[in-house]
Amino acid sequence: MKEKTKNIGIKVNPPTEKCQDSRCPFHGKLKIKGKIFTGKVISYFHKTVTIEFPRLFFLPKYERHEKRRTRIKAHNPPCIDAKSGDLVKIMECRPLSKTKNFVIIEKISKNESR
Image 1 (cartoon, rainbow, N blue to C red):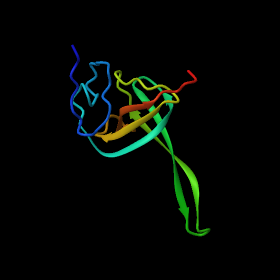
Image 2: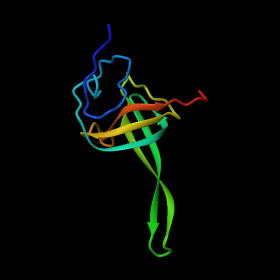
Image 3: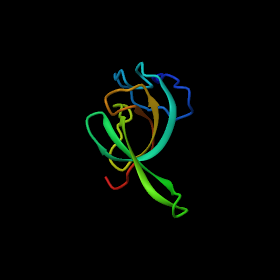
């Protein structure tokens, strides 16, 4: 029998595994809203990952753009379980800790060099 996951209001592939995490948008009570980012996992801890993605910053003095990077900490539910090198989609939620305001909603691709 297929386990039913909660509809989070955005079109993503739901995880195939089931978890008991209350901070999971699919199986818990966490509501998501706001900004969506796609980035690469550069480090992971217990249920927390650091996502990094590049952006362009305009320098008015030189009338050029420079590359900068943004790093965001996000909650990693056990049903998704992202590791270093994975490409993931994250979405904003309520503050989960002092630095975590995002949660992973989809693992886009896995790191092949594991």
